[in-house]
Length: 532
Image (tube, rainbow, N blue to C red; front, side):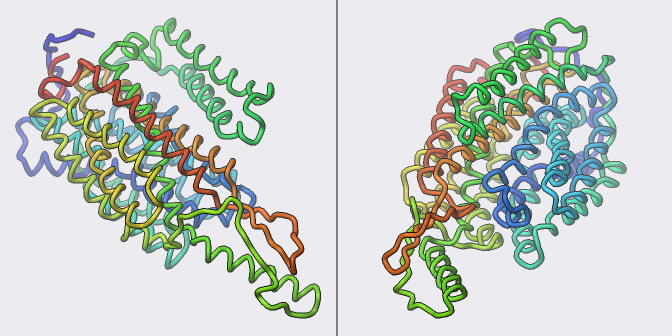
């Protein structure tokens, strides 16, 4: 990969001679279709508390509804990115959409946890639609519009960030969580013919074989490592049988690197992977995405949890009812005393729609605006400075979430500030990657970015799941002065579990910020990928 030498502009079907209306129509359809993945994440992550009762016994492992999406998406992104280079980006766009619809239908109709997770695995191919969308924009848009197009694609046109939470909240509150998946399937079915009719196919093709072995090693290694992170608190972090999962996962990842260096057509070009321009972007994406996974889940879950007084009253009433049924007589309420161990200070008891309106909506608008702004800034000053701003905000927001009171006002204000960084971050990362690699390697390199972002989200969710498991809630019930055995309260967690997760956010974002500060890449105005 050269540094600083303009490359020959391969004919990719760029719409240089098309009208602005035609160009913006193509961009709009690409962006709307690529919003499938963030829209489902926005809705499903916020609705996990409502989904959990359908799968009793799953407990905090309900997070695997999100983790498996990121895990499979991480493994599929480079493979689908390579397929898009070989077989055509528009074709893979449509295939991913069809698989997403099948997964949604499965989840909308099942009450089996295994089938539900399989449906989520099929939906995970939608993560690769963003990878393909970045490639289509680089191939099809005029060069001067590529940074803006990437910025808009990264943060959307408002369907996922604004309409998604409102629609999800309305459906869950008035129907059921299953309506979420029916609506996602319907939206995708509506978009498929629009993609077919409006978006041209890129002319860029790479003649290579698909490396299935590399994809299997990557996904297997990532899965085993994440299982260790998620289940270590249950099994014992230092137990030999637990460590075996981690060792096996790391061994597969090392073997993946060894194999990819030797095969003629690797799923990932290791020389490209370890080039400073690419490696800095990917490392930053991995660490920064931890915060995205943790914050997106934690804020929604905490806001929808009833406050401590409501839970305590519910436990007390349940105990009184049980005693009355067994003893055949009623006790006065003061005869039953209830305390929660360890107790918690958060909880507004919002419905999903209330959460969307009172907390998420403002942040969604901010994200959308800042994504487009970051694209414009990258075209003028380069993407590195906006990225530094984004990661500084991430680190500060992580600290604020950890130390400030867990009230609706704090969540609204801090989440809105965090959303500035969120918009800048998601716009800058694909711009930096497009600027770093030649056209013929764009699919796989953007697939690498998808891997790191998906893995970061999945690791973040696995980490906070472990913290929450370690700080689960118990009800201590005293009847007439006699203490009864502690009663676990599923799906309720102490403040400390969330606070530790937020501190991880701050530290991970600080690490990502370090990479951005020392990065040599992105210091000049973005060109749309014309020079490397």
